[in-house]
Amino acid sequence: MSGTNTVRERIPSPWQRQARRLAAAQGGANRWVVLVVLCVSLVLVALDATILHVAVPAVTEDLRPGSIELLWIVDAYPLVCASLLILFGTLGDRVGRRRVLLLGYALFGVASAVAALADNAQVLIAARVLLGIGGAMIMPATLSIIRQVFPDRRERALAIGIWTAVAAVGAATGPVLGGFLVENYWWGSVFLINIPLMALLLPAARWLLPESRGTGNGPWDVLGALMAAAGILGVVLGVKRAGAGDALLSPWTLVPLLAGTLLLVLFVRRQKRRAHPLVDIGMFSRPAFATSVGCIVLAMLALVGLELLAVQYLQLVLGLSPLETGLRLLPLTFAAMAAGAGGSYTLHRVGPRAMVSLGFLLTAGAVVLLTLMGQHDRPLLLTVGFVLLGFGLQTTLFGAYESMLSEAPVQQAGGAAAIGETSYQLGAGMGIALLGSVMNAAYAPGLREVPGVSAADSASAANSLGEAYQVADGLGGTAGESLFHAARTAFVHGLHVTLLVSAGLLLLGAVAALRLPRVMDCSAAAGEADAAGDAVPDARDEGGVPAVAAAGTVALPAQPTGDQAGHRVKVPGPSRARHGAVGAAGSGRTAP
Image (tube, rainbow, N blue to C red; front, side):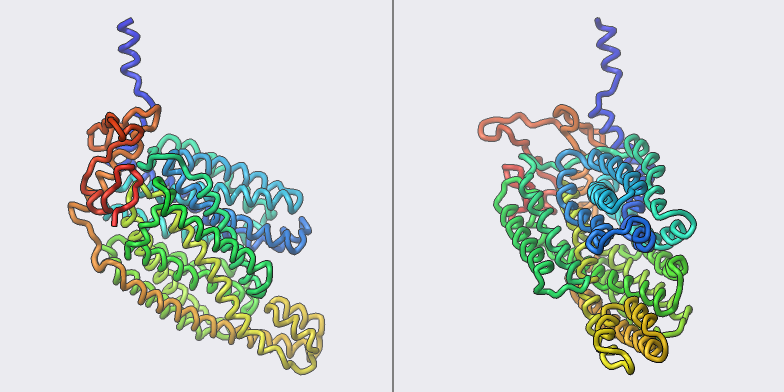
């Protein structure tokens, strides 16, 4: 009998294995292996947001979707992903971030197979919805796990720099890889490449990644999570409809916007009243956190609309193929990678305020430089402009993400990461809507009075440059040629106006960034605070058994007495002093 007990004592329990895995991840080279796994998964999620764009003509020819179906084929993934980020980010804080991440991997792989083999538009839309759900599980989990395994802020800054650069690589590589696959294989291959990578990632992540969760007590707010998801879905859908050309007061735009805004307002009020909120709204009272979120929105608002217009310019004005277009955008990607790799050093030297402000200013300068683009190809100008744009934008996003994540309490890492990713998606949607509207307003007047072209044909041509080419081709002769040249001229003029508006938004971001801290706080107290907060990520991982902290100490469960029954006792430490006092109920919200 004693021999049996000895054998049992030698076999580590699940919670002991998790604690040892976290200690190894935090204390040695394993944390960089963890970062590689997280970055590879992020590449796939970012890749799927853009890789389908160049495959749309092939999908249209094969599946023959209607106009509404085609819209949902393209938009279902980003819409669903954006709306569920807060839901799954906060769920990971409660049930385990690694657990949610692994489920996301599995769902992403299955959905990719369904999408690749879809034989009608409805199946493809359903697969894109599932991909969006999987992406929403993966994205906030990657950032919150980075927060967990890199307790030292300097190392974490380097890790976040690599993370943001990888996200840029995935998004920018999408059109290149998609163009290559569509030209050489069939459109389903853009989804099929996910499957072998997910098959490798799933066991690797299960073996290497440590489990962690926040310290929040109480039940998970299911109703609040659904309110947040529906509210964000409504806002993003309304913004996207406005960006697609619908009038702001049309039912398809106004109803989702109003309903989404109302639900988000109710969500915020609900979180303020709850003892155990999904998201600590008090984080927004901290200037560094709120400013970082605002800077992410402004940066994406300026960038995504510009990328969309740049792709149209390269293909429709300069006549480049999808693959050539993707290759022309590669300098932007390489510059973003360089900015991410050097971001930690730069942040430590100049501080968050100067870094984010200078990033905005550099991006604004690149945008103004690109106003020199005309109807003829100028490769050197485009390359220099894209390099400056990528470097400046990545510098901005890196500084904003790092400040936001470092300011948030560690127990709210999943929620904070979800807020950052949601602001990224909202900024992208708003950028397409706003800059698209500016572009249409500047483009359409140039086609009102074209010699030999009727008012009806002019109105059709004013919808987009692609449609103008179709109308011109149908007219033929002198009238068609006049419309062709007028449309190109109007598009370039509209592009210049849009670039100047974008530069103004970027300058506004540079001013807003002045509210960020002047220096990067890497003091011993701050480092100890992070370490204290990160030491016991999941003290109840298996059956409520305490986990061994990375430092070798044991987090003993408090013995409840009197009215403390049912609540864990909070041990004050440096992290509590840094982020504010924690109430006796263990809500995790900061005291005023």
